[in-house]
Image (cartoon, rainbow, N blue to C red):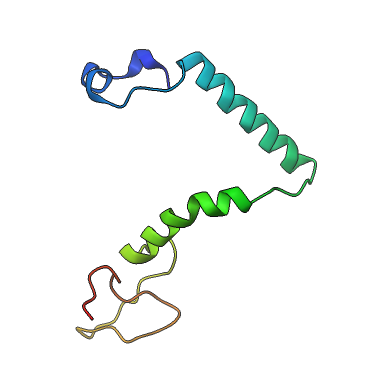
Length: 96
């Protein structure tokens, strides 16, 4: 993002960056270039770090009952049946 497009309130109250904008753009472009080069060359990607990094995000999506992970169960009844093919409610709101 171009810092000239950020609203004043965000500039004043948001988290402060650890690196300058130009350096961040350079870092991101290097990473993207390497990624696309690896994909185009058919090289296997090391997903060990990605898996560990994404684990809490995926867990949060599972707990909130994200329809990106499983289609919703739609039924005419007030209570949808348990079905392994679809998501019934949100595990976050279920009571033991």
